[in-house]
Image (cartoon, rainbow, N blue to C red; front, side, top):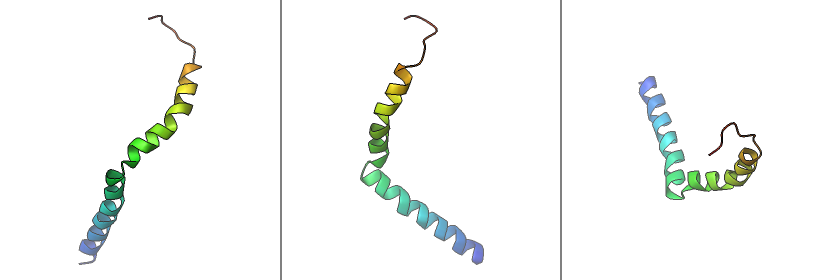
Length: 51
């Protein structure tokens, strides 16, 4: 019974976290926030091959 309670609590916590992330599109907003610093980093890297 204790194991069922732990699994149920973990599943409920998982749903409680993932539903707002999906609903408010937070994953895309996080990527958009990190895009500028990442592009700045990758633009300064030396290139080995020419396009």
